[in-house]
Length: 158
Image (cartoon, rainbow, N blue to C red; front, side, top):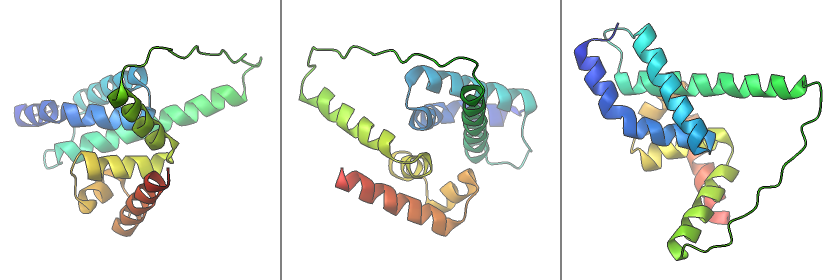
């Protein structure tokens, strides 16, 4: 059970957590579902009284997403029939330069491996320290620094 202080902290973290979900999934609908699952799990299962709410919720979110990816892989691998790929018609209307730039940035971010994308989002967008990201993603500090550097290099090359 969450204390009222933890509940308030969780609510304050929702915007950043939603951006994190979107960076993991690359899809608005999946991000919304992931955010809902994360909040439900944190509220349902609670957290230790001394836990840092943001770090705890980001870690829960990441773990749920990794479980979902594994589940999707298993479903695809053992599917009885091949799924016919459906072409999605691209929108022909141009919403202006800003929209095009956003799409380019989004495409470049989505092209990054998930590990690099997550680390970069937490550092560059959420403003988390490398140490916080290390705790959230449960990886060594040097690995965070390396992933962020490789992600930045990958974006610069794109």
